[in-house]
Image (cartoon, rainbow, N blue to C red; front, side):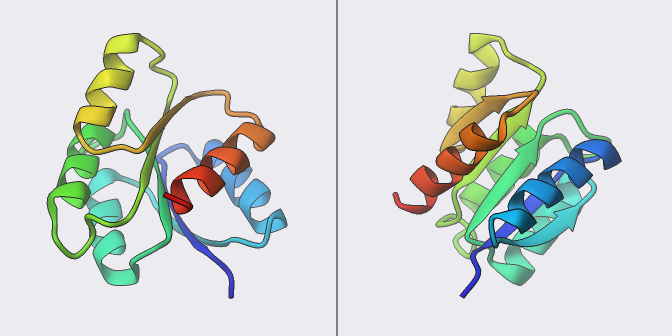
Length: 122
């Protein structure tokens, strides 16, 4: 059975890139365009892992990750934050919100896939 990955990303080009990488690696890809939609889809579909952008309209990735990891129904789902923000403080804050990993854009395919495998295995 295919593992489900929810990608929460407002950039269409980034979304397309993640979709290609994940589809080629036999993941089922679910897509949300903002944090609020991501929180709703996480609860609805219970994916195996969530890739979360940080800078998005309405609800940012930190807020969405906090909602997902603090909700009993979705707390078990590992969240991987992916952002252009590469300051150590951003990484620490991301982990404080409940993220299992933090990747900086541009994310390389091998790094993305190995990170997904490692957090799904936890």
